[in-house]
Every structure is written in C-alpha cells, then in structure tokens.
Image 1 (cartoon, rainbow, N blue to C red):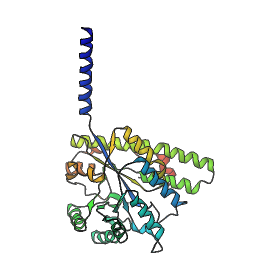
Image 2: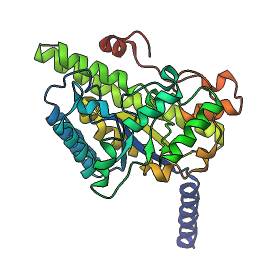
Image 3: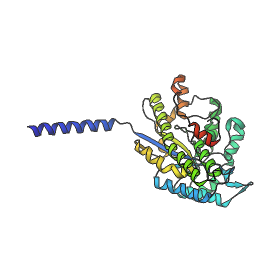
Image 4: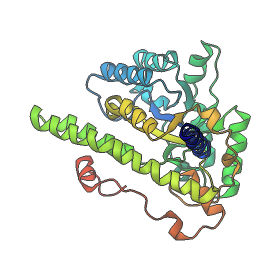
Length: 324
C-alpha cells in the first residue's frame, strides 16, 4: 500500500515538473557583430591586429553560435586604397561561417546626411562585399543602420525600406541595445596608454569582470520590456562589435547567456517571430531598441522605459567619455 502511495506521489511530482517545464518560456537570441572587419580600424592603429582578429574568430567558433556580421568598407582602406590584408579579414569571417551584411561604407548617420546620400553610402558599402560573397555563391542580404538611426518619420523609414528591398536587403533590427562600445573604448584606452604591465592587467581584468554582468543586466531589462509589451518573450537580437573586448569575453558572454536559459539562433530565425511585424513608432534622432520603438507605437507611458542599466561611472572615466 505504501509503495503504491509513494509511486503515485512520485508520478504526480513528475507530472508537475513536466507541466512546469512545458510552461517555461522559450528564450531565444541571435548574435550580431558590427563594424567588420574591425571596430575603429579606420581611426586607430590596432596593435597586433592579425592576432586579435584570429583570436575573436577562434572564440566564436568555440562558442558555436550563428552570427551575422556587418561590414564598413571604409575600414578596408588606408589613404583611400583598399588593403588586400583587410579584405582577407572579411574572407576569414566569411569562411568561419559568419554571414556578412552591409553597415554602410563609412558608418554614416542617416539623420545627419539625409536619405539620398545615405542610400549612396549603402551602395558604396557593397563594392567589395558583393563580389567577395559571390566567390562562394552568396550575396549580401542584411542591412544594419549605423547608430541604430533608422529615420525620423514614417515616410523616411518607408522610403529607405523600399530602397533596401530593391537592392535585396532586409533590415537587421536590435532589441537588446547596449553600450558595449563604451566598454570596448575603455578596454582599448587602457591597452593604448597604460605602460605599467601590472596596473594595465589589473584594469583590463576589472573591465572583463564587469562587462558580462553588465550585458546580462541589459538582457534582463529588455527581456522584461518584451514580456511587458507583448505578454511573452520575443526572439531577441543582440549587438556587439568586432574588437579586443569581444575577443577576450565573447565565450563567457555566450556561456553566461546559455546559463540563463537562452538558445542562440540565426538572425533569420529570430525575425520569423511575429513581434518583428510590429509597427515602429519612434521618430526621434537617437538609436534605440526595437522593443522601445514598438512601445512608442502603442503610446506606452514614460514609466515603461524606466530602469535601463547604465554604464558604470568608472567605465565612462576609463573610456574618456562623459555620457552614453
């Protein structure tokens, strides 16, 4: 009798566990990397560039996640001349399984230069990219707005959308926005300026230890916003950059995200989520998450946007910046 009661209790617990597991929300996220072949390559000499480049690609291979990377062709040039070694960096990305997209030629700001000039910069941004992808039977199909500035009116966004469609592009939105670039600037600044090996490593270690928790706080924030707006968890799209910080931290970032219950998926799979059919209600000058753009289309109150985790002041100081 006792065995029968015990068996029934165990079965009941297993059923409850199965229900709880089935009810757990599915967490999905796509990883995207901007400013290929390497962030700030057009404005800053990267010490040991080839080694850092190889290090980042190797880390991504070990992390085993699908990635779309976005190219600025200005970073392929020195004094207006395309450098074969930098084009080879793009081939390395491509051959590592990273799909390459267009991020404009010069990482230009749509709101600063206007739509006509912006469209020309998009076309200039595929002069090398398109034939490079054709070598393996591919063509660029993703476009990412620099600074996430996508148009200050529905008309401007629609006109740009029509232009992109005519040239075979889809917009790659970002839902998990962050200021990873500030952490990367701080990381580069320490590497460039601190000549004391001991203090240099102490500060770099401090940045590495703080970076992943910061990124996870941002992920939590946008997870909560998505849940609050949609009543469920949308497939997320994450943005980082090709830089030394990513080379040193991307494996731990991916592992920590997986420990949170996230599954990494392709950008194409993420955009199959119906959330990405939501209208964009943002007409401001900045660059913000698509979740917040959708919220603006629904006229959410200001309180909806509260609580976004900031970059710590000490990181801002190391980066030499006063504000995000």
